[in-house]
Length: 250
Length: 379
Image (cartoon, rainbow over all chains, first blue to last red; front, side, top):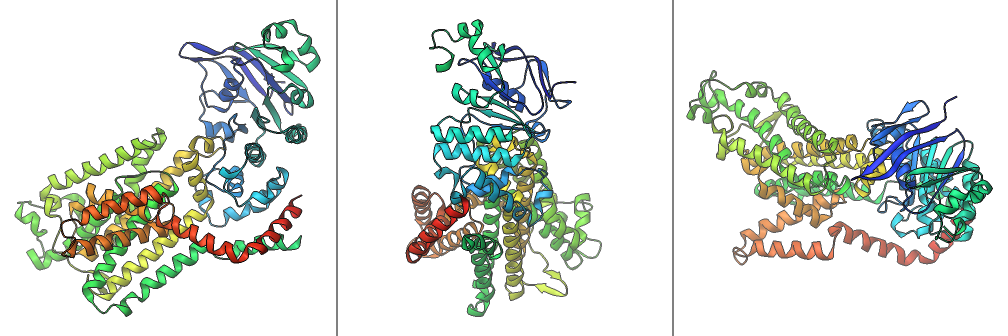
């Protein structure tokens, strides 16, 4: 059987700098894959590539038997891929409930969204989502007023609203307290199975709590792959993190 | 527990403050003729209403969709010429005989009616064209801009340039368009057996009804999910794409809708002014619309409409008064600078902050209780 998401020999070049260099990565359906690696390893670029933000100069990406090469971002999103950005990207001038409403993107066509009353149809979903991410009492406030942690939660809630089959998370716990991070881990474990997740994360505690398979990237390539114990024992990984205080402090 | 839950669905069916304000303003303009027994002034109010409609249409594209269209007057001018062409053709039998041509064509030695004038023999066609042509032109222009992901200042430059080109073509093709003079000496519009004299009440009511319909239509659009998505695009364009929305398609629809309303306003302007002129799609008018919108509040349809009426009204009054005859542009410029500096959301923003302040005061203890109830419901 083909893997759910398959990156084969992809290369991304920024003016000659190879952010991804002949990368191969397979993810199977329902998996929660953690992607780690030292700074500049190409983790974020890998996510950018999958969701269409950057284009590869070589190689191919296949998701759920659809070839994503050269598709526009919204087509990739419609194929079932959602993305959370490293810097939380929400609509700051819109209220929290409107943010969630925009994210309920089951009918993305412009003409189907011109019908009156469509907006109200999402109300129930919005209430449920707000409860899930703990923003019920913030629904009517503009997203600009939220704290950094709340903004992270809002964007996570928006991804749940989008209900994408494959969710790409770039450092979802950055700026969160230990307690918030635990809540996030719980949520991700609940999403696992129904959704396929790829999570880029620096916090090894978080990675150990959620990940079954960890992929380590270094210099735009896949360096190692396996369980947390295997990764920590891997000499090549130790070498890549050398001088950075070891993998646990990455 | 129950109260906050039931409070929310209630507010869903209650008309919003914005809708109430819109209806109140429409009602106000309906009763104006009863208070104003002066045909000249009534014509002037109708003129300002049309300009208000034009500013409102820009608010839709600039304030809501984030598309700064500096060539908004192009759509206005297209609508205005569509109406002027059909009204001009109605004068032909009187002016130059049954087989004749519009008078300015005769003066320019044109032998026969050019093909693009033919369909304007039908008034129904002209009215539809006055809305459809601006919308189609905007959609085509939008297709090139938004498919190519042109944004910000480049959109402003392209729209302004497109308008200037059309303006020059109209001035240059004097034998077909009336050139600098525009199309003057028009017949009256007749619709359903009613003649619309520029200085009559029928014209005033026609303008008011169209204004109200356009305002409510634009408001309804902003309340749909598409209306919400264009605001999300204004806020963070690329983010919207990753939810699967085709950003370009939404921008084209908003841009074309805005142009359609501007086209309707242009047709009404021809009726109210009794001529069409290249100045209707001139740079000066187009930039004035931006100023009106900014003063009134570009993120409020009603704010932009009232901003235009207020500024154009004050402009008119100042330019006619003896004291400000020389300095009125300076006064207007100063006013604009002050508002942009201190009221970035325009007068509408000021009103809504004041309104929030008034509402907050007496209900503060009550709101506190409400807030706690909501937290309990959520946890």
